[in-house]
Length: 406
Image (cartoon, rainbow, N blue to C red):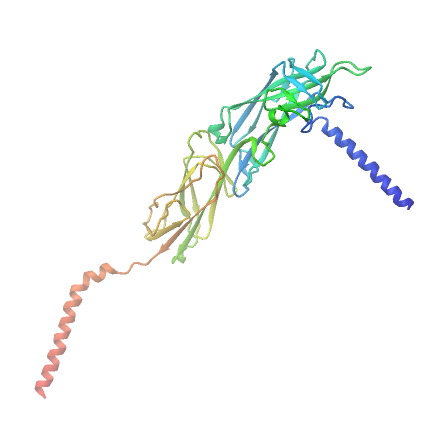
């Protein structure tokens, strides 16, 4: 029993230590939902705060894709004074404009030469934005409001879907008097909102935290029913696979048939982006040339939704003619006659811009049919007819002569 009690006591001590570490870690985060600020923290908070920028990246196969090549810029400045703050105990205060001296990460980016994770329902890609109040001299205790402005003028050009090119978040910084024996006013709370409104944290609130949309940064905010009240910027991509099959021509089973793919960007997208073919990166271009050996395929990953892909095949086999049939395209070929050194008519695939896409698979089947000697038969047909009649007359004449002799 003593051994058991010692073990239980050890577990309790360990749990207490873990809990203490948890409190310390949470101290630099934004306060949890439903609270306006901690009026009596054990220690003042750090003067550095980290918020997040979110880009949701979509791909039907959850493949890694290259970033859209987009940059967001940030600035922070003192904001609205005179907003009324009411805490859970009914204590009221008015905001003051934040003093100068706060600094913020100037920009974050998702370049188009770095791979990022994606998923069918949107993978959250986060970038940290660091705000420092270390150089701010607060004139007294109170709640100081700052405006954090995000600017991005290249969303449409990069194929990124977002509500605005400029967005703002409002940060309230809670400052208290120094404790006995300490100097300088101390930060004891951070709260970030989408809306620049009064805030009522009491139980009977009409303009409560849900109305002002408390947030961890420039990220998606859910209403609780799964429907976002604030959406994150989104980047939608899809994949295209092109396969090749050869019928009745074992002699060319290893022949690399040339293919040409033409990528037409969606309306409004002017910037370049990268896509992945197998493991090789390809820059977005007007035309991409590749080859496919029968029985194999090539896949292009991370194509922005809304892009139309035209696909055509070339017959590079001397003196052989194939009939080409395709499946998976928007308008398929059916026994298209492909002569030597010629390209097929292009078939196309596409998805809707700014929405979840579906992977596309386009299959090319080349059938080699040996041509019968129709031309030769027509050329000798008159002689065959004359010869047939001649032989017939000869046989008939011979039979008649034998009959007369008998």
